[in-house]
Length: 244
Image (cartoon, rainbow, N blue to C red; front, side, top):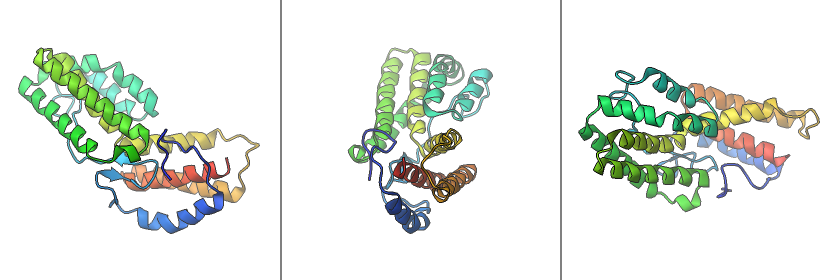
């Protein structure tokens, strides 16, 4: 059932089969336990990394104290945007954030953060990424590349650039983590429903099923239940694809 080319589906299953799967699986798949360690919703095309390791955030010791408050605020707000737009915003902030991190935190702290990023990349690399959606493995690769750049800049004592690379690597993993993926895909589905043309081919019953799932996904996001949000979103996308 998993597409390796993108987080979206490349084939459209029949509506009846999808709905049978929905009825059978929604109840038992909503628990936080996942059959694939290190993943949330690992049985779907919306699998997300759950590494259970701390990821670097901008600011001083995890807060905005001593940091560029406008840049930190923009970084936080970027996570409410669609994936690519949020990434574009963050890429424009890393130089500023890296310089402020270098000014407020020590080289020893930088070594620790780069080490933690390396541990997270290694843990992610221990998963069978070839069997997962390529958006997830691409995020791990971006993090691995950023971690290598951070180590190189540390060796050069280019601490601002090293902090920027370390933060970019942490964000690459955060971007494919449960919260970011859940927020992004629910937002995508809400926008898709808003733009549904009047001459669509869905029945009223089919659309109500989809809307019910998307509403459930939104409620799950608001409750920080990322696994439930991802599964609701997955079944909503399957139902839309089934009659698309």
